[in-house]
Image (cartoon, rainbow, N blue to C red; front, side, top):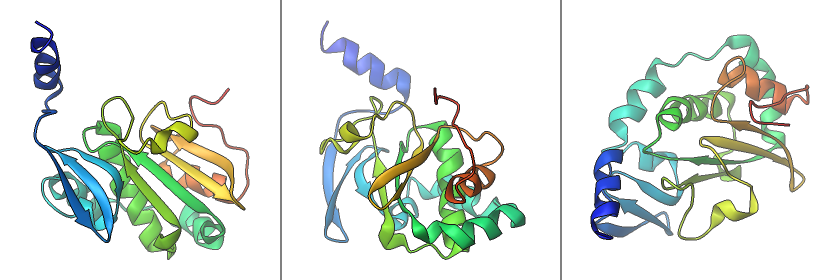
Length: 179
């Protein structure tokens, strides 16, 4: 019975937790768990199947607000950013392609970005999530001088780009779960 329960959870969630394989990309280890990335990854990983199926059309279709993008372009390179997302998560599938399009169109230095994919319990084998109080994905954390300034969590207050523009320009911003 104990073996049956994890199997049923995997079936109900639509993603098997069997067949874990490690792949080396860009001298970093990422883990692919059926159709789930785990650990640090790069945008190029999302351009591979099975992720490209949802990433590419959403990336191409998204046209960010021009006014918000001007603000982002003026300020975003002052920040280091971490994004935590799940390749299994609908909110992550919606926001992650938009996020990368915003970064690309703003000329953000992707060397200052750390992208981390988590499992259903919002964890990674390396425990990257432990120091950041991660409860929901996607979570995008903005750092300045090594300190967290603010974070975007799960869904936008206005739109992803308008929320990011507020964060990077230092305007008042609270995500839906901030106290």
